[in-house]
Each structure stands twice: as structure tokens, then as C-alpha cells.
Image (cartoon, rainbow, N blue to C red; front, side, top):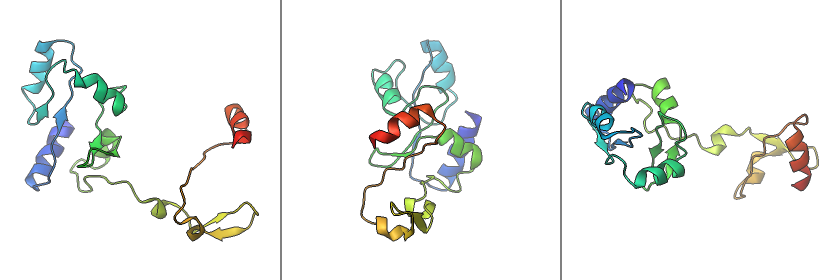
Length: 145
């Protein structure tokens, strides 16, 4: 929480348009109160019925968990904790992921085993399949592709 509090102050000082909403996993109201009393941000009520739904929706299986949402509610970044640890002052906030075109190489190997321009994939849905020849589940799945 100290790292998040420091980030929060930095972003507010720069007038960033954001808010943090604390989703408490505390067991008791007393634990919840002792924690929220020192926080400068919003929070869900203790034992809110929305808590489980939000945790499931955003993959909060372990804590701490910080998810960064776009203004429309879509996930911008699911590892906010990692982003805060790498960028504690939020200089790159809201940590938008790089566009796929920035990550892919300029060329790829086609089905004909020759090199092709990545532009051949423009306007196509892509599925990036990560696999290895030594992986038993991969060996079972790959023929189904």
C-alpha cells in the first residue's frame, strides 16, 4: 500500500484523470476499517456483493492485485502491481500495452516456408500459438489446429 499511496499522490499532483477503488478481502469489519482509514482513495463497502464478481471478472486470485481499467471498463493492464513496481512514479501511466504491430517482427515464415511481410497479416484476426515440440499437451493439441 505505501507504493500505491505514493503513486496515487504523484498522479493526483499531475492532475491525472483516474481513481483507485479498494476492493477489500479483509475478513472482519475491524480489519477493513483499520486499512481504509489510512487510504486516500475510494473503497467498496466491506463484504460488498460485488467483490466476488469483480475478483472473478478481473482474475484476482491472489492479493495484492491491481487491475488498470480503461474508462469504458475494459482491461488496460491486468498486472498493475508489476507496473507500479517498475514505474513507481507513474511516468508511463496508464501503462498502455504496446500495439501488436510494435511487437511483431517485420517478416514471418509462411506456410510455404518462405519469408513474407507482416503486412500480409493486416486486417486478419490473429491467434498467437505458443508451443514447443517437447510439450506433451502441445503434441496432442497441435494436430487439432
